[in-house]
Length: 214
Image (cartoon, rainbow, N blue to C red):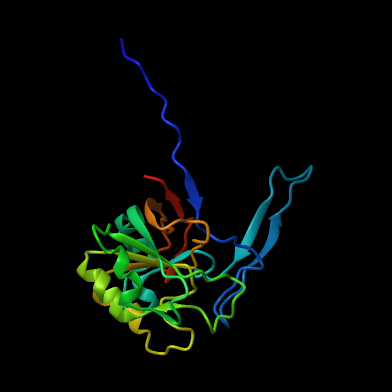
């Protein structure tokens, strides 16, 4: 006789911010807007909205073409980096950049995906968020990390014109997730699921990013 044992469902953390008219975007980028295109009525069986937004709205995955002419679009990137074991590392109060010393405590047996929690909140100024030092990304590359995520708008500061951290990602063929919500996530290991849409000409894609307990 075979006995089946029902296992409790694994806890899920939704690490995506809401996407609506209040969603923050980079200064000058396209703000979210929505209008009703078809309206449910006696003459129409459905509601259908049309939406306009930057692909960098909410939790999103930058594609290489965002910072490299000729780079792959969101629809062309390999999906494997966006799915699998990951580690959330707390870098609370680390200042303007996550430096190598801020993650040194969490590098043993590192999985291939790392999410950095800096305690950024969406209401903060775009001029004051924590970015990531290129040296930190270079260090993670030596640990075979293929994806880095952060709870701030960018791995580079708002006023950067050279984007050294984005180009460090490019050099090491790493992927990035930005604008995650990690406020309620304890430091530790999880399963990450954050697939970009198959947008064949887009430089980024919104994602519905979640973490699931292992």
